Amino acid sequence: MCPNNDVNDKRGSEEIFKETVKALKSFGPLFRDSGMQGYLEPLGFEECSLRSIVTAMRAIQESGYPVYKIVHDTFHHHLGPDTFDTIKNNYDISYTGLVHISGVEC
Image (cartoon, rainbow, N blue to C red; front, side, top):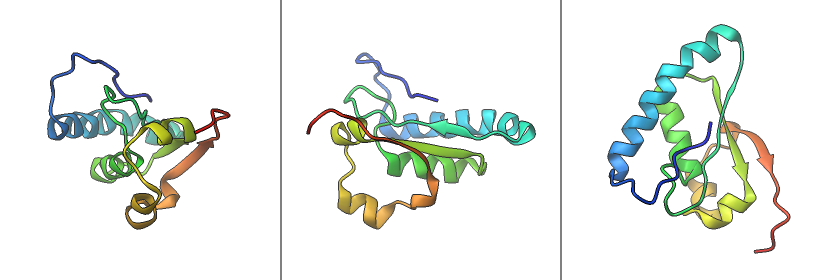
């Protein structure tokens, strides 16, 4: 599941977070009932509705559905707001389901 990328999106971060949680809640039963995992990939672009793996983790927690994992893409991490300290202090690595290591040099 990839977030919305739209330079014309005028929603604030709180509204975006609430809508993300709502979407996770709506898909949660489908993943649970099928025995599948949903993968959420934060994209680091400025215009992205979900840029942070920490925010993605919080949205999963708030959804109440433990059927989601996060795709940690190193390219998008480089573009996004999360620092290594932020991840170390505020992120539970057990939420990572897939790491995509980019060949793009930082």
